[in-house]
Image (cartoon, rainbow, N blue to C red):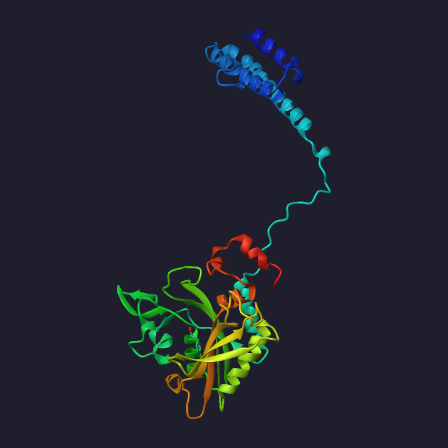
Length: 346
Ligand code: PHE
């Protein structure tokens, strides 16, 4: 046994890395031979176990010596191979690195902020209210009659309370913020309310169940339709360019009287007629009107003293018109190829 160990020690010492044609494989073979499960070391330990106790001490030391020698050799080989393959000398340190992706604002945030900025310049401040609302703030206080179709379950996401449809729902428009602001404040009131709204719509290129609105409300003494028109003309010019024209068409909302829908001259064809404006030269962009006295009274404002106007617009639609985005679904898909197109605008 002693001789055997001496022979193995000799073999280990004499093994040279250059003996291996394939170095990595050679090292592995070497390891298996000495340290593998059925290798030299394990076999020797088997014999060792059966030896008389008085020989064990010397033999044990020799065996450990052999094991360490094999381990050191393998370590030495590995270091050698690693050094050889270290190609840092060939590395081009002047090469540019992979730049990690830097995020940017979402186009809807960009457009929403732009709308806020435009109204902030003429004294409007931002107001917020809950996305989960009660019937009063979404409908009743806004003069919706009980049978109004907007309350229909097909439009509104109702929230179940104890298994029943209560009067709690996701707000279908930001007009609910008007009511909350009027309940808490007396005129003069001059706010805009940006926020998410929810409607039970099938998702398509032209409709989504989640979208964003910006609501505006101005209440004071002697606020007139002329003030509304001038405010919206200012907005249209700031948003879509100095040459933009507006036109108001009569419309209907339960909470405004009179009500109107506002169009801007098509900013793509300059009013000549194109696909986007369906050859009319006009693009519909928002709903507006004079706040119905019933709404003022429901929120605790004296309608004999005060009057006001309100308007509401869709942020997705504004962004579509401004950047010619054709499909609403793009906003929520988070496809980097889409998002990256708006990196440069802050
Ligand atoms: N709330 C209306 C809508 O969602 C928009 C609107 C707001 C109209 C304020 C008039 C006044 O369509």
